[in-house]
Each structure stands twice: as C-alpha cells, then as structure tokens.
Length: 248
Image (cartoon, rainbow, N blue to C red; front, side):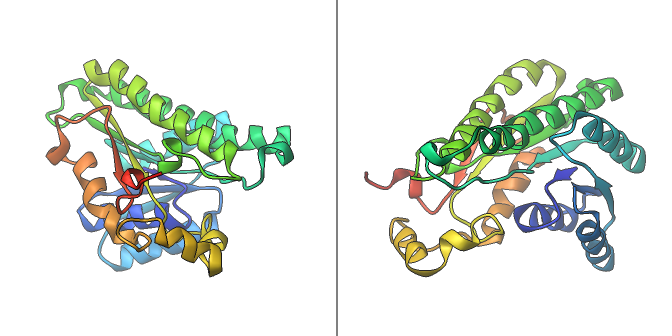
C-alpha cells in the first residue's frame, strides 16, 4: 500500500514497486488520479487497486486499509508517503495551518502505520520469512532546517523519531520500520521553490549540484521493502545528493 499515491513521489513509488513485481494498493483522496495510475500500471502488466483514503480521518484510514487488505489478500508492505507542506514564517503560521500539517504528516502517518501493522500481526506476519515492511517518507528537513517551513520541519523530525520508536516496538512482531529522507526532488509540493532564482541558489548548495531524479529513490526503496533489507530496521536513509553533509 502506498499513501499519497495520486501524484509525485507516491505515484512513482507505486510504479517502482509494481515494476519489481508487487501488487499495489494506491491510496489518496483524489480517486480520479488514482484510477489513471491504476490504468497505467495495468497497461504495463502489473496489478494495482485504487483506495480512497484521507489519512487525517481515522475512519477513512480504517475503511481504506481494510479495503486494501480485501483486494490484495492482506498487506505485506506500506509506503507511508502522504504529506502536506505549509510554507510561511513561524510568526505568520496560523494554528490551523500548524495543526493541518501535523494532522496529515504525523498523526496520519502514525494512524496508517498502526492500522497496517495490526493487520500484519493478525495475519501472522511473525511467522513469515520476510515479515512486514513499513517505509515512512521523512525528509532532510527533519534533520536540518530551512527558513519558512517550521511546521513541515517539525513534522518530518517527528517522523524520523517515530520510525525508530515503531521499529523498536514491532521488531518482535517481525515488522521492519525504516524511513527514506529525500532531499530536493521535483514534485507538486516543491515546484514553486525549485524554479527560478531560489531554485538555482538551492541547487548550488547541494554537493552533487543537481536536484534528485525520481529514479534515484528506487534502489533505496526496494532495499527497504525487500529481502535485501531483511536485517534493517529503525534506519533513515538520506537520498539527497550529499546535502546533509554540506558545510554550514
């Protein structure tokens, strides 16, 4: 199951997993976009099902995960990707904007992970050779900060630590919980920031001197979701062109 799969990174994650042989439940609020993605994956010889889910709504998550389990005969993996980005200085950030960011990026990620993990446990994942795999989508902004995105930075720092906490609790259940921390990749959330002069300044701060390409995420994603990463849990892998190791 991939949340936030109606566009950007989520849609790409679904394509990459399908190309590797997975049956995929693509989940998001925009069901029309999901249907287009399902048709695309089916046309390439894969199998995908669309699930309408609002991760900020507990009942929607419960119904959506249950539907995905029925369609696919249970879930063995989750890419916890749904997220929003609020731009604005901290003094200009309303309580509503702050809460919306946390409701989707933190509460939603926890809610989906908890429900999927419970389904895995009920299905007997502890006795599977590979077990279950959860990959949370964090960000390098959860480790280092930038101006004007305080709510987003805080939410992604929470995801980074939540990943470790869930990894510790669920290791005994044979469920691995890891995270990917992308740097700057083109998407709907970053389109405005990465274009023009601001984007050029940002690009020059990256040691590899380029923004990420979506396919740069495929190897790390498949590592964490497959038997290649069977002994990895609680890890956050940065995919950022060296941005986190750039000098201050």
